[in-house]
Amino acid sequence: MVRRSIRVRGDDAASVAALTRRFGRIRDDLGVPGAFPGPVVDAAAEAAATAGAGDGRADLRDVPFATVDPVGSTDLDQAMALSRRDGGGWHVDYAIADVPAFLAPGGPVDAEARRRGQTLYAPDRRTPLHPEVLSEDAASLLPDVDRPAFVWRFDLAPDGAVEHLDLVRAVVRSRARLDYGQVQAAADAHPQAGASPDDEVAALAVLLREIGTVRQAQERARGGASLPLPEQDVVAQDGRYRVVLRPALPSEDWNAQLSLMTGMAAADLMLRAGVGLLRTLPAPEPHAVERYRRQVKALGVPWARDEPYGEFLRRLDRDVPAHLAAMHEAGALFRGAGYTPFDGAAPPVRTHAAVAAPYAHVTAPLRRLVDRFGLLVSHAVVSGGEVPGWVREALPALPEAMAASDRLAGELERRCVDVVEAAVLADRVGQVFDAVAVDVGKDGASGKVQMLDPAVLVRAQGPLTVGTALKVRLEAVDVEAGSVRVVPVG
Image (tube, rainbow, N blue to C red; front, top):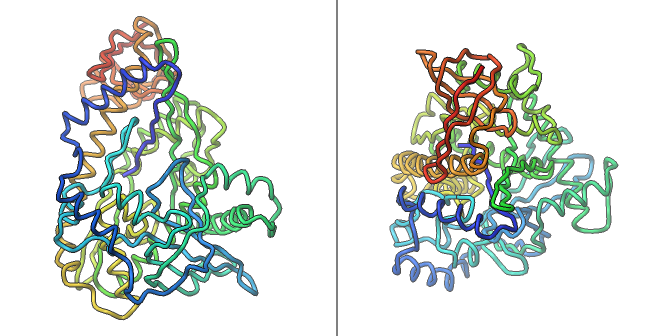
């Protein structure tokens, strides 16, 4: 499921607090988990103090790993070390937090994680999958401390294809915690191809750009589609709210390519072994593509009929507001993802349409339940060992556990977005806006219209014709309920 990233900021503390209270009420209404039960906290603290030592791991502490994440992140799932190979291509060491080292199967932390399914995000806070003593401390790949990790070791050809793969459980020690802005600035300062700066941050940034770029070309050749959704900043100022879209940086896309490469490698291992859990996604339904075409037309973004949606998304310009809005609304094309377990014959449905290949989740075990199991399956396959029995037994139940948490995450996001959009429009009741009808009910008497400024998709009452430009009047806003009512005029 594609998630929107929404932050509330601004110098109007009272207005920020008002939205925060509403987000809290939404969490209460939906039954979003609160604090961890005492036994779970106690078990996590004990594991944090004792796990990961003396278990025959490879010692990779001399490998110069670094993490690249959003500013301020402390739940660090991944760390990377990149280098060029003699004769062309690259070597990638990609460390993933070894969460299984801290969770006893069937223990209190394991049981609570299965109940939660994933970390949940709202504009004001996140609700973690694991207690913070693990997710933000002992299991997190923080800098300058020894940490257990699964390390994926890739040799890549000059075109980015994987030539060799290994996966080991190891002890690692990250050298630096970087953010996307730092990496982007360092890459921009060395724009020439093949640069070899002495500065470690710049060297990593240049290599990440090289690898990310060739992997993007691989994605394009497969027919894949990426959706780097812009962040939404809700700015509270002088009792009013406005939305500012912040585009994803290229460094975020490059980083995502490492995760995609790893997930594809894990899926290949699982399919060859005949056991695992794939992340699958059907191709978008034709009516969803048509609706999206109407939305982007309303935003004034050209899209030729013969251009695949993946190519269209790839050429959107992050610096053009209408294109940012088009990126934002494209999430509807990525709905219907699920998890497909198998133990024996390969499943009939094994492809993720956006990846355009089989794919598995294995790179975010601190924030997503299934990754822990995918890592253990992958490691057993590579090492020639047996997949643990408790992992095999858990696979059939994981899709429903994840589907339940996805439903909760989706409803939390939807209701928070509704409140945000209502807040943005609250002081504009009675005003008339330009819009285009993008989705109409069977009776033609109601549907959804894409407002152009602000770029908000709202439900409208009144006669509508799909694809028709119109003006709508904002009749009512209920910020508490997150509802907006508009009607066509003229």
